[in-house]
Length: 271
Image (cartoon, rainbow, N blue to C red; front, side, top):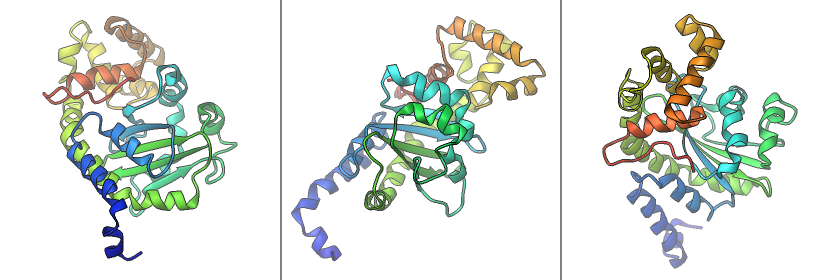
């Protein structure tokens, strides 16, 4: 279809209005949910997760999602504990000229039979996952993942998602710049958020929290601090007890929310 014919078609007007609405709300906390609902006009899906991969880190920060509380253990606890290391998506992060729309399932990549599939992915009961990889100017990446339970996205559906990728990249880039970047910079500065929330923590506990938020795993923490893995676990258990939380996801949420911009945007939402 020629462009002038496409643009003169009145049926395309609501689509343009929806795209304009995304840009108008690109600094709002609920933007990821808006994008997910908008994408359902293109490809049916049941769930979304927005993750931030800091430069050089394989461990993502969960920014937003619509996963019910009853499924947090299956989706997040197992993933953040260890499964993230084997995520096929990591092969596409930071690649110059690499795919920006990545499809992950047992038929389109070497997933079935892998440790990632048996220890994590199979428990999600997903037929298909489509990831939009958005490189950021500071070397980090945002990844919007949509999950499908009913069927695997067809080649035509993937082409449609590839055609709207530029829109997703644009609105998520604005979202990062206005809603995430300042808060993330505050977190990675030693003690910025910790001073507000962790007044009851010891100096060593505050140091461990700061390192955990930056994406270091338990073994990395032990090596960095020159202590045993068991000692790190004891500190972590004490930190969780003092702060009244149970998981690393809640820890990140607590500190990132405190260091978010003044307008009150929470950088991690535990739905």
